[in-house]
Length: 309
Image (cartoon, rainbow, N blue to C red; front, side, top):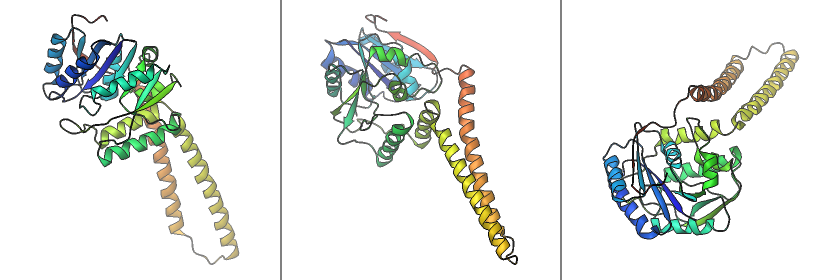
């Protein structure tokens, strides 16, 4: 099986050249190509990627005109792969190149997708907590198999890649697209190293945006939660109304309960705002989808002389 590797690159000028060099050292015999997608870095990552496309015949350097996010950059790269299976890996050496073979070897057991699994994840507490939350919610929203941990370091069979790139919406979520394309998924334990340089580009707004893509684009269950909440609040309101009427009939001297009224108004108003917010996310993303908002905009593509695509 020929191997393609997709690496989304963002401000990785200090690491991406060494990463590509090491990949070629270890996998030259089975490597079909490396696709580098420069997600509008603010350093000279684009120049380094273009230099690598000149150095190696089977490297493709794609530069995007604006920052589109990791999943959009990966989707862009998947459109250029020609190998039998595709590894997606980060640009910061937290996925050591030597660990790629573990994914590749596990795929030989007949899986469509193999995820990495970490015994010791070298992320900040904030990132670890976000990942746990993501995996917990994904199990319910998008039917993630029990015990499977979603990670960015994975290998995907070309047949599944073909299904993934059929998605043309502006907000791709790679794991959601995988889970709706196949159930033949394995995992293997790999090493997770410290970042070789810099710090994570995922902050709270980026993580929230990623989670909303999963919640809104790949499941209608948030709407079902709101239906359940609405029925619950309606039931509570009816019971309170009955209780207030009975109390007033049994004791006419009881004054009108302004506190109770204010509490009910605030509760129901909060629910209405929450409901409208979720509905707004669905409608807004449908609008952007219908408006043909692109997943990415390419500025340049530099292909090595041996690229077959």
